[in-house]
Amino acid sequence: MTSDAVPSHGPEPVPHTDPPRVDTPPATAPARRNRALKTRAGYTWVALVAAAIIGILLLIFILQNLDQVRIHLFFWQFSLPLGVTLLLSVIAGALVMALAGGWRILQLRRVAKRR
Image (spheres, rainbow, N blue to C red):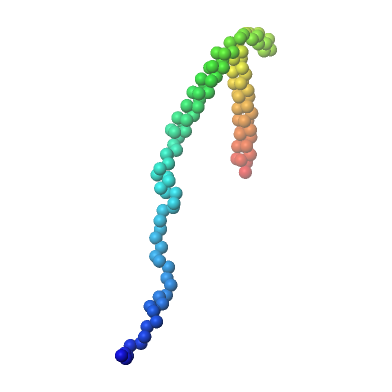
């Protein structure tokens, strides 16, 4: 059996072309849907809960330290419970640090305005 057809040695080679590019969302997109939203209200709620816990611990500390201590400040003399005295000392220290920090912020703002 003879045939006039040219024998084929397999399929013809096809020139290599990249498949069409399909833009897909990043792999983190599904994770964003499952993750809780972080909002200011959420941060405020966490801060309020933390402040309540700290306040309760502070109240317990003051109630456990009711021994009276004599305080001498310049020409004043008074007596307060130890827990209250320590609380007032911490508040005074925080105010001093806030004043020092505020002063430094004002200095930096002045320098920034000059530039």
